[in-house]
Image (cartoon, rainbow, N blue to C red):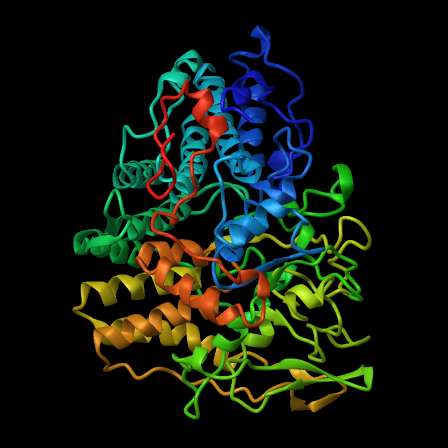
Length: 588
């Protein structure tokens, strides 16, 4: 798909899927006419269309689940946390290429993602122009709506930067016939991130702390997002190798101050509360994509289409497609030592909880090597054979993988409501519910602040207190009970808090471990590795270790420069061959 297709296509949608609240009930239809210019009702509908980009189902793609706004493929399958899953290696094979670091410039999934992201930016621009065409006397909320659109646009440009690095920047004032002339190397990564952070902070000056309607952008969202962007910006990268060459402590101090300025948030008392619809806009939610079911829209509701492929398959009650499966390496990483602290050298230990079959009777099987201590989040995040799955009592998680010989027998437990829950819509779309997708939650910000404090280096105990606050929530959550015997736990759960008076190196290791265990499968892992400058080291070690379990990793190598996706051939041709390629890929 070429970038200019975005601007030739209709900018409005007949079925908005991005948010679920009252202000999105009416959808604009058809093309823009001159009679609609200056009409506040039409302008509001265009703003709604910009919000709808959070639902993914708005481009001309008939498979929004393969271009997930949740980043399950771009941020987790591409990292060491997850396998592609599904019906085998060729099922959505372009994601398999991402998983094995074999992405080429003709990868349609990557080109589709570029198109989707710029389509989202385009909707923001169209809405900005529609709002500004209105008489302020007729549209008193115009300034607020423009600020909301700046936050939405900032989100999509942030995604473009951390996926593609070299991107063209256009604003709403640039004539569309000039887009083809915009180079993709005019601004550096750091310059893009600085502009995005400024855009968010400028919007925060206009927006209320608490929005008038749930789901709208707010000043708190804008400031929280600016903190995240500045955290990325602080890790300054070499333009060619992408190695981290400096960590900007001034920017990190700004991260700390922005997070300190936020109020009204807290951790939910139990980690598992994150996957309950009743809590989706609760105290921990900072910025979430809003979803709903049975709201009168097509296909049962404004659901999370990005996760459509990922509900458990095989013999599961979800009857799903079984994509996005936790890696054995992730499961191993949840092991703890005798003191309840992470086994930092877990890759030297045998695989935890491996399924074994009776050679004479393959209907008989058990989990082997289960005596080691584990963090209870293991069974909050992953579904493992014979282990109780949420509150489902009909059976434990059994053979819920579609291709166990290829991907193993584990599945994801996060992001799904329990299969017997009235909050899940039965049938197709498989596993659909009203559960929001949390883009930024309070636990993220506590860990971001801890990361900033560690790298500044002047308050390591304060950083460890923040990490322990997140870890203590896991410690105090209700542990999973053995299926059929609620008097026993399903595993040897043992989790303790970190010591606070530690070295900077230990604190950094603890932070990065906690970030992985707390946020596993949330679409952030690969981007964290790139931010820290350790993606190549971690991924090549992962391929070496995991190739014993997943033979398709044999020969997989993370090469210099693969921290970002390549600029696709389609976009190079669209630019009349002006775009330059990212380092690490053959020049055009």
